[in-house]
Length: 299
Image 1 (cartoon, helix red, strand yellow):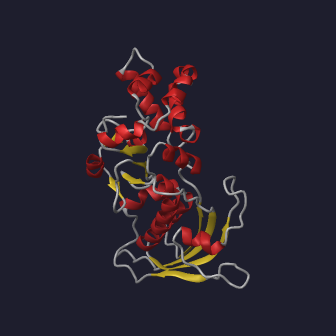
Image 2 (cartoon, one colour):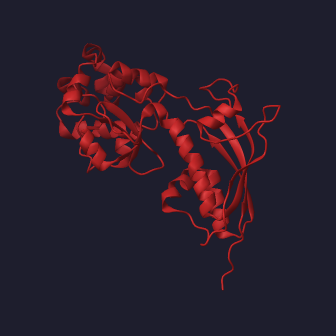
Image 3 (cartoon, helix red, strand yellow):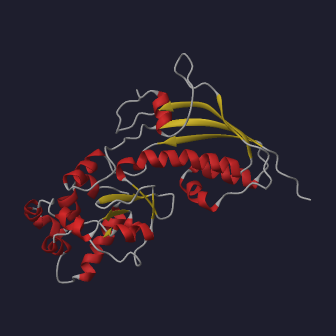
C-alpha cells in the first residue's frame, strides 16, 4: 500500500514492506482474496479488521502496530471518501502494509548490513530513530542493543568498573516455564557470563574503564533508552544530579515488539520475507553493580 512517507510520523510506519513494483505484484497473488471477500460484512463496519482478513489476527492485534493500522485506515478513508477501506482494499488488491521501493527505503531509513531486501517486511526499532529490523529477530536484536546501551551509558556516566552480580530466567505467558539454561539466556542478549557448580551466576567483572577526561554526560543517541527503561533512567538521573560513587542496576529483558511466530507464519504464507525463523526471547533479569570514578571538583 503506497503512502506518502514525507507526511507520516514514525508511529504511522512502525511496520513497512520493502518491495519493488514487480515484487509487489507477485506478493498480492499470495493473498486469498476470496477469503477476504467473505469477511466483508464485519470489515466494512470496522475497517482496521481488514488487516486481520489479509494478514491475520496476530498482526492485527499487535499493540505496537496499532498506530500504523489506524493511520492506514485514515488514509484510505480520506483518499476514497465514498468507499470503505475494505472496498478499496479488495478492489485494488493491496497488502495493508506501507510499502516502498528498496532504493527509496535505503535512502530514507537505516537498516542492518545487507538490508533492505526486496520483498521483506521490517519493524521500526523503538529506541533508534528511523532504524528498521527484520521482524523474526526484532526482540532478540533489541535485547542485545539494550545491553550495549547500558554499557555505553555506564561509560559516559564515568564508570570505573561494572560487575555482573546475579541473573535469573523468568516465567512468562509466552514461555510458560523458566527452565531455559541461564547461560543460553545470557548468550541471546549478548552477555558473557560464567556459572558456578549450582548453575548460578558467579560474580564477575563485566567491563572496566579508564578515568574519563570529561564530566559525566548522556549521549543524545542513548536518551531514548533512558526514557523507556526505568532502571536506566534512574541510573542516569542519579549520577548526573549527585556524586554517587556506586550503583546497583537491575535490567529485565523480555519481548518488546508483540509480533510472534504466528505472525511470522502469516508473512511466510504471503511470500513476505521476515528474516528466517522467529527467535523467541527468553525473558531474564540481571543485576549489575557499578563503581564510578569520582567526579572532578568544580574550580
